[in-house]
Amino acid sequence: MKKYIREPINFLTHGIPALLAIPATLILVSQAKGAIQTASAITFGIAMTLLFSISAVYHGFPKKETNIRFWQKCDHCCIYLMIAGSYTPTMLIVFDGWLKWTIFSLVWLIATIGCLLKIFDRLKNTAISLKLYISMGCIVLPLLNIMLQKLPLQAIYWLLLGGVFYLVGTIFYKKDKPYKYLHTHEIWHLFVVLGAASHYIYNLKYLIIT
Image 1 (cartoon, one colour):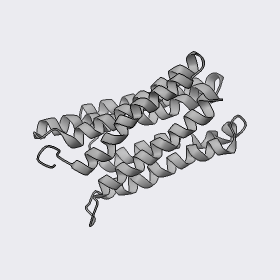
Image 2 (cartoon, one colour):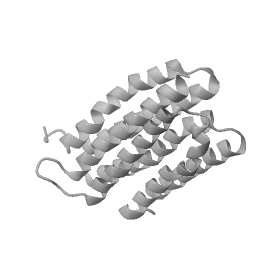
Image 3 (tube, rainbow, N blue to C red):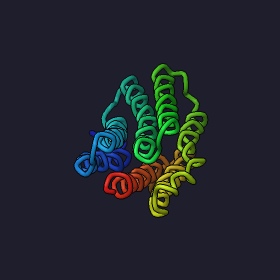
C-alpha cells in the first residue's frame, strides 16, 4: 500500500472520517431551522469535511517535497478553520448581542491570522502553534456559566468531552515519535476524530435539533 499511499494509517484515519463527514454535514443541515442554524450547520460541516479531507490528501498522495510542504500548510490551516468552525454554532445560536459577535469575530480573526502565518512560513514552531490552537479552544471556558443558563448539562458534557479529546491528542502530536504499533501522529488523528464526533453530537442534538 505504501507504494501508492505515503502514510497509509494517517491516510485512513482521516480519509474514512472525510467520507463520513459529507453525509453527516447533510444531516446537520437538513435538521437546521432558519438562516442562523443553517449557516452554523454549513460552517461546522464544511470545516469538519475540509479538516479530514485535506489531512487525508496531505498524508496520502504528495511525494515531492514541495508538494508535501504545500499540503502540510493546507493541513495546518484547516486546524484553525476547524476550531473557528466549531465555535460558530455556539456563538451564533447560544449567545446574543455584543458577546456573540465579539467572540465570533475574535475566533475567526485568530483563525485567519493563523492561516496567513502558516501560508507565509511565519509560524514554523510546533510548540507555538499548539499553544495557539489550545488558547483558541479555551476561549469558551469563561463563558460556560452563561451557556449553562441556556443549555442542558449534557450539552456542556459533549462540548467539554470534545475539548478533552483534542487536548489529550495534542500530547501525542507534540511527541511525534513511533511506538511499537502506531506513530504518535496516528494516535493524534484518532483523538481528532473523537473530538470532532463529540462536537458533532453536541451541535446536532443540542443546537440544531431543539
